[in-house]
Every structure is written in structure tokens, then in C-alpha cells.
Amino acid sequence: MNMTNNGNSRKPLLELQGVSKVFNKEGKDFLALENVELSVGEGEFVCILGPTGCGKSVTLQIVAGLIEQTSGSVILDGTEEHGPGPHKGMVFQEYALLPWRNVIENVEIGLELKHVPGNERHRIAKEQLATVGLSGVEHQRVHEISVGMRQRVAIARALANSPRILLMDEPFEALDALTKEEMQIQILKVWEATRTTILFVTHDVDEAIFLSDRICVMDINPGRLKKVLVNHLPRPRHECMSRTDREFNEMRDEIIGLYSSLKDEELDLII
Ligand SMILES: Nc1ncnc2c1ncn2[C@@H]1O[C@H](COP(=O)(O)OP(=O)(O)OP(=O)(O)O)[C@@H](O)[C@H]1O
Ligand SMILES: [Mg+2]
View 1: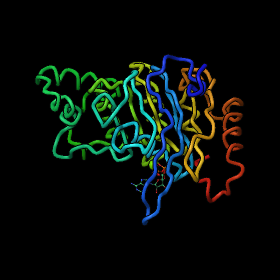
View 2: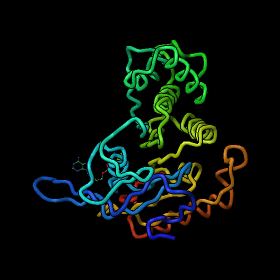
View 3: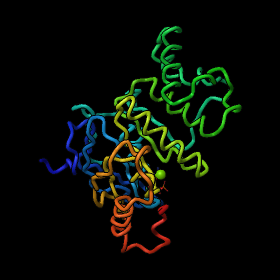
């Protein structure tokens, strides 16, 4: 077992090796991320959990290639990554759909950029909309559908590019509790159907436990990986698991215990 695999038992798809990030804040160096070592397996669902400002988004943006690390390497499929690309599908809290396009045209955007012919584009987009449970609304405008549906469109858009990995930064945070739960079930169904590797950022403890194979618990000041927990809860979770189960609670207690040195106001996790 190598040092960086932190409990990953699968073939590694994504590896972060000694990734650090220093920002310049008001003329001073600020260490946002310190020496992150992480391996994400092919087909795995990994959550990054931590309080606000611990570097979750910075980590994801480095993997996405949107910002560059100060030191260390990001390796995808054995190759060192530089910059963004359609093989890294991104879904953020703001779903960033184009309001002047209808649903299916939004899903087709990435395929257009790759010059995929119209018929083929349409077929793939329709298929991905079905994957996220959105058949029948292809020609509706973005403002005509609910916020939960918009987030599904954003997921379908990312999936349409056949990404090697899906990067999700608090994608359900802006949704009401019921819609959020529906979307958590939906993303598990998508993951089970497509077996796409997912790296998912959240500060909601229950969300991380419900979704993940492993949870990367992050620490703050400086932002770093505190511990990686393997989540042994049985799957499929949406059919057999209740958030009041004993194992679920044990995992929640373990995570909260890891933050026992932080004051409540610093913690800022949804528990
Ligand atoms: N472009 C930037 N320039 C300077 N500092 C930055 C920049 N981006 C992030 N930071 C700082 O890096 C730290 C980590 O930020 P990050 O956005 O990753 O936090 P987070 O864990 O995603 O928090 P949240 O839960 O609030 O989204 C913060 O202190 C933030 O202010
Ligand atoms: Mg963030």
C-alpha cells in the first residue's frame, strides 16, 4: 500500500501528490492548502468535507485546472494535468445554465464545442437527460423548470462530455431540504448507472455519509487533509438506509469527534 492511497482499494484514477496552494492576501503569503495527498479510485464516490475556508473549493478548482497549485502534482489516468478540459465535468452550486437556450440546448453546449454533429449531439443530450430523470422537458426554457431540475440539467450537461471524473462543489446547497434529499438520491442513481468517478465537496456531514465511499475530512488554518474515512455503509443507500441508523450515527459521531478542538462558530458544518 502506498502512502498516498488513504484507503483507496481501487485502481487510482486521480492522484493529488503533495498539493499546496499559497495565495497572496493583502501583500502577505497565505497558505490555503498544505501538502494534500489523495488518491481517488476509478468509479469511486469521494466526498471532501470540512468547515468554511478549509480549502475544499480550492482543492476542487486545482483538480479542475481552473487554478494552478503552488507545488505538487495532479495526476489523472497516469498523466499530469494542466488546465481544464471536458474530461473533467464540473457542477457547482450556481448551475450556470444559459437562459436563452432551452433545456436540451444547454446540455448540448460541450458537444457543440467539440463539433459533434447535430443528430448525434441531440441523441447524447437526450440520453443524459434521461439519466438524470428529466425526459420530456427537453424543449422547456430554463426559467420554466424548478431549481432542482436546473441542477439536473447541469449534471446532464457535464455527463454529456463523457467525463473521466465529475467534480461537484456543494451542488445542492442552494436547494430546499426536500429537493436536496431528492437530488442526493438522484446523483446516487446517476453514479450507479454510469459508474463515473465523483469528487464531491460538501460541508453537510449527513450528505457526505449518505453519498460517499470515502470521506476526506479537512482541517483549517492551514487547509489540509485531516483524515480519510472509509464509509462501509451498505449500498444501495437510497433503498435500505435511514439517517437514524446506528452505523450512520457512529460515522457522524466519528466525524464530529475529529473537530472537537474547534469552537462551534469555527465549525460551520451542517450536522
Ligand atoms: N483567489 C483567491 N485569492 C486569495 N485567497 C483565496 C482565493 N481563493 C480562496 N482563497 C482563500 O483560501 C481559503 C480556502 O478557500 P475555499 O474557497 O477553498 O474554502 P472552502 O473550504 O471552499 O469554504 P466554503 O465552505 O465557504 O465554500 C480561504 O481562506 C479563502 O479566502
Ligand atoms: Mg467552497
